[in-house]
Length: 220
Length: 222
Image 1 (cartoon, chains in turn yellow, cyan):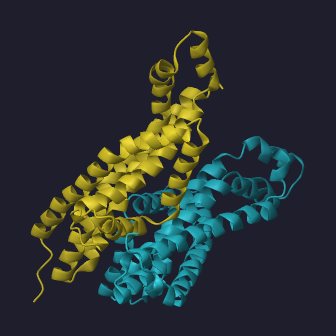
Image 2 (image 1 turned 45 degrees about the vertical axis):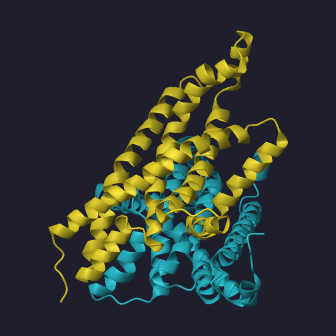
């Protein structure tokens, strides 16, 4: 009556891992520019813009991603915007990514030593040049480990779209589990796929972080 | 504007309150359990190779796989091998294990940050080992990582929203029920989202109070 849990099912899961990666790609593609904008607004000299960006980050970080998902899935049609489910997910994850990366990047920019701004100013460099060639590269280095850390959160976060019925890795695992009635091995294999994506990123993030601590300790 | 119609949701506010209470106690208990698990794991990381390996495996597996898949393993997987547990118990186990792995990582950093000189100083003052551990190692380590840890615990509150997927009647699940009763999905989730924002703010405030009560000596440093 039930199918056996076989290699065909594992291949089915692997195929849907690609859907998960597609969602992650979409979120990063739209979320990274969003994060840059939020980071810029958070550092804006205009109080209104700064407060708006702060409110946005507070709202998105204060509400579970599932609820953000439901709200964009059900709320956008109310605004007269009808999107296919996949893109509605994209909107939710763009907001999520923008809020978190914006906050990470703002703190990276603020962490660059103040003397660097002053030195650039003393050399007569303009705001834009200072940002792009003095502060930016140093902030990028500081921001890389936490950004990779966020990417891990994002890969895990995309599993919630299974609740709405997008067939990515977690949803595929549910389907296989229902067909084979072998939930334990099926979900463990799915977990293994997630682990295979995330663990290398976690390791890389940690190694970069350790290298930064080492390289910055003698000067401080 | 947008044809919002809240009356159906407002009529069922009691469901939302009930769900919020479930969310609060589930995440509260899980936070305490996570603190205990995290402390034990962080201390175990200083032990022998085998214990270290086991703890590191636990921490990395939990941190690198989605919570949703973890609760599916517990809720659907364990009964299939003969361990029968209720949704609430699976939820508590899942949430505690999830929070515990993150807490372990944060607390490990806290313990590593205790300077060895402090311990030596305490020893030379003749403090007993138990007292050194409590007053010189554990409490300052907890104080040092208090804010990252409380931030992680607030994320745990939000993670609990996924428990609706295993039919635990917490706030998100109540929102789902209300939207299927009223067909007013967006309105229902606006209320649910506000509920989470309120609970997040409440937890932040409680953490601030607790910090003042638990670590009065931290005020001196500011």
